[in-house]
Amino acid sequence: MNKRDRPERVLPPDLYYNEEEAAKYTMNSHIVSIQTDMSERAVELLVLPEDKTCMLLDIGCGSGISGSVISSSGHQWIGLDISRPMLMLCKDDEDFEGDLIHKDMGTGLPFRPGVFDGCISISAIQWLCHANTSSEIPSRRLHRFFQSLYSCLSRGARAVFQFYPEDDRQTEMIMSMAQKAGFDGGLVVDYPHSAKAKKIYLVLMTGGMQKLPSALTGEEVDEKRQAECTQRRNFVVDRKQNKRAAKGSKAWITQKVEAAKKRGRDFTESKYSGRKRKARF
Image 1 (tube, one colour):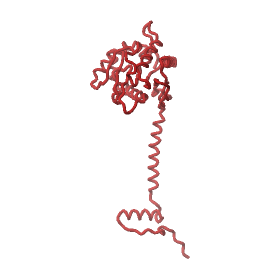
Image 2: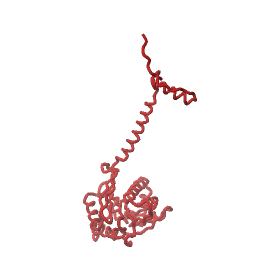
Image 3: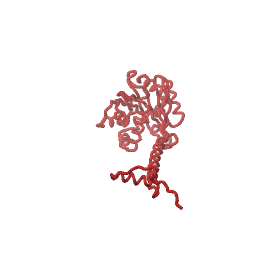
Image 4: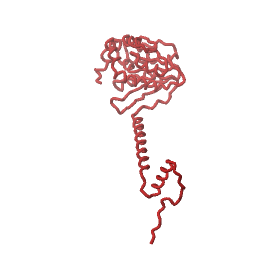
């Protein structure tokens, strides 16, 4: 995508996602599918406990696509977004199960300390890298956001941001502001060698540096296909092993005996079965 065509360069998010654009976004099946996949991956990267229902924060929740993934995972959530039309679409969804807050994340988050067990954000954080007015300074807005996020997360919790940086400079600014606010962590880049499938996730951690999850490379699919091919090859080998033996050989006699036994006939085993006789002169 050309830099000039990026939504964050066209208008501020609260103006860009008006009623018409919000409806188009939510009704686009391709977008919904991609957003769902990225949300599922973000929840996976949180590494939440399997025996506990967690309270998660969804930053830039939009019309609730990512929130639906959280609910399907058995967790509760609160969504925050700057676009009222997006939030209205989310609220009007009959399957909606979360709570919503209309707010600009760049002004900080209005939550009590330690209230969330984790946070996800899909395609939102890059909006803070742009100044919509002369008074907005992206680095300060990012720092204010990350400071308030760090405060409202419980210790040991994670925050996962899927985002589309314009360049390395944006990525470095986002990561440096997160580190300045107290977070540890780093980037997880799925499918790094694919132009279309490549996805960037910033995995932030509270309470000390933890090992970053492994990125998806596409080799997982290759391994699965290889296992399936191995099974097929084994099946072919087994069929070859079960082919008919040469007539008169010991193997041929053994097959005949086994077939007769299955039909209920009795046979006396002999070590001489199929043995070649010496030639007579």
